[in-house]
Length: 383
Ligand code: GLA
Image (cartoon, rainbow, N blue to C red; front, side):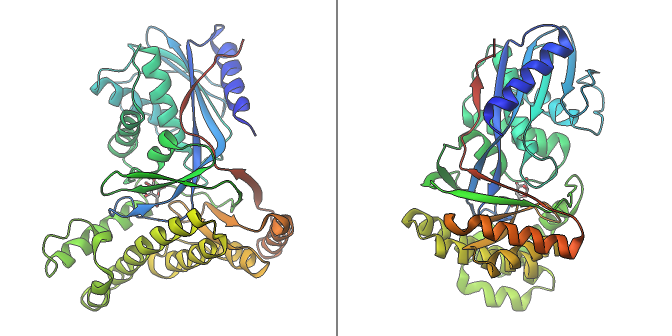
């Protein structure tokens, strides 16, 4: 699907629901993370890529708040000061509350949301929604926020208001991505470097949906905090777990109880793999990037324990059929796999993956491809 589709969809949803035209539309992309998983709350590097699939938010000033999504087409009046409903509108409530804190919220608005990003598939539909909403609503309020400000509003909305223990990776790529590039984001310093990524990548959705609010991600984050505390007892001044020098890893593994020892091993080795993958990508060495992706996947499977049998099968099958590499992408416990494969072989690899998946699980996975897309932007309101 193209960007036009989510923008057009949001614009016509708005027109149908509110019998008027939106004053502003903004859109933001979903993402795959090539590598650097569970790094952003441990101070390590991440290497995400924006999808061509996007979420569009259309908005106009109004007395009070009226929200509609293409998911069900039902217009909901929302009280921004009441406890939020536990559905997609909680993200909008979070964004509005955070925009108010920086003086960039309109007093009220009509809002229509459409997306071409699969929801709950580990492809960051929530950050696409919060970043696009922050942009559209601040425009309606007559404010122009910088990409960095949009990241902060969107991150606070999801982290503080919705209560997901996420880091800033998803919001950062949704706001800063540039077409044809991956984003090497050093989460400890905030440094961003764009790495050329002209090719195509493949996404295989497992159809196993993950629930992040209050779930496994929050538990892993607590485990990492505990591991950091324990490491500080002998590594004074350690700020982030991902800063633990590789040479200290054997000691950490010896001193820490399981499963914390395994979590540390993932964090330390993943930081090194991510920087190596960014270098390899910059050289155009996709075979090496693929090898690092597979090592990263094994680390998620064995040490971080965030994979499920569906993703393990997809990765194994992709490699066996000639992909450069493949890896669970995003938080995990379901979600999607990103696959890098030689262009001339990709169709055959993906057909085999789908066949083996169907044989084992009795249903077909969704398989599609994308190139590296661009970050948040204001869209022209269609005539
Ligand atoms: C989710 C979070 C991100 C990141 C990943 C794991 O997508 O929203 O901030 O922590 O999990 O890498």
